[in-house]
Figure 1 (tube, rainbow, N blue to C red):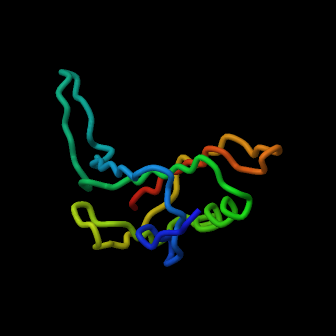
Figure 2: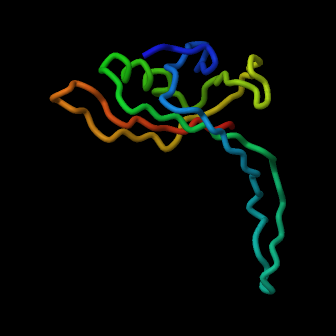
Length: 123
């Protein structure tokens, strides 16, 4: 598996994911947002277009798995470098955190970790 400079955590390159990364963007509403008794929605947007980058890896060796999870282990936030949408070479660095971490299992027969997935979410 090869590392890529396009995606980095605290300046350390990540392994290139198995599939293309499709970031998504969501607005954050304040706790005062919601529907009134008539059913009308009232939104108080605190921040627009907060990014989420989903990563997944089908198979990882013990060393690849340890390196990958070690990039964000024990960190509540970290600096995440990623490509700028719409640019093929420009990158940006934002403060992020890791969420929805999951792995299916370690296959003792093949010695590989299967289906590692996690989201990197902009703070």
